[in-house]
Image (cartoon, rainbow, N blue to C red; front, top):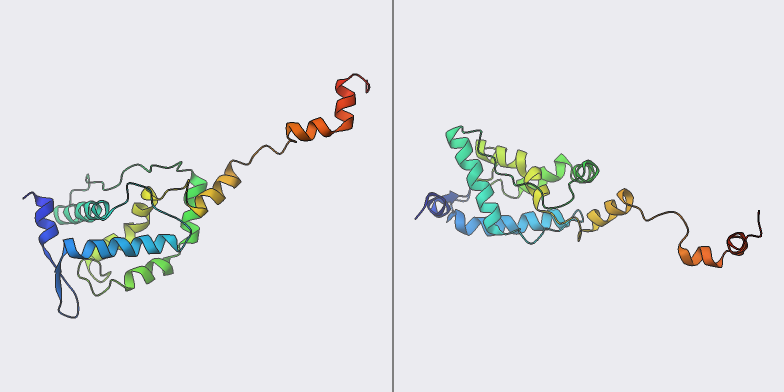
Length: 175
């Protein structure tokens, strides 16, 4: 068993005294992240999975435990990643919304914002989620694409062809 697999088997405690392995908790947390992001008009791409979330959490745990700041648990986004798209994303999801998401997990030792690791995860969650959303299929991504990349405002070819002045002009009648 490698370190990641061992980490997945470690117990996570809940305030009610219940204990589950991380492997049992992470799929539920992943589903809550999915529901959270959909609430704002986004969807995740094909690379999104509980294993993706587990690897992110594991890297944060290792980075925090070792102090190794070179561990960077973020891949490059697989979408267009414009500053405008990111600003729109950040404006839609307020700090209160993030607090609400994490308040549902506050009884879990790994995710409670009352713990050092939970506080780091809460602080970094938007950066993580941003990398895995699918802007092309998400409502918000499509909305921003219409703003950022509008179709030409000029008339279409069929509109130009039905314009009598343009027809006459191309035939040489208007000087």
